[in-house]
Image 1 (cartoon, rainbow, N blue to C red):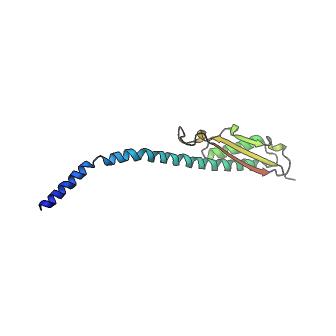
Image 2: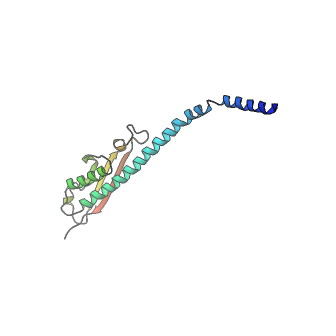
Image 3: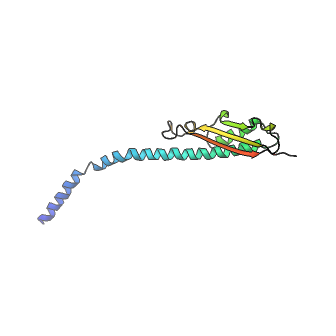
Length: 147
């Protein structure tokens, strides 16, 4: 019996010694975990925005290759598509080649390019890792004609 009480006492003493260990471990691991979580959020947002830009440039190119389309119609289509995906871009981010799609001849390639700095579309107030990244998407289609 005496031996059991001694063992119980030793166990209690050992538990008292380790009382603050969990707090110290949490203090070491928590900042690293938070950095990983924000990094995943930031990278996920970048991939999502890149996909939206790719689809928006495709939508703009589809408008641009139609007979009688104007530059402003293309820009409006691209900006509207981006806004539905909660990505705010300006008209300056949209580039067309040729500048006016109405000047392109049948079969000529028409390119719609979007260029956006990631820091402008990030969900984080100050992007940690990808702030200097520029996201670019381009679509090329051949001009159509109703002839």
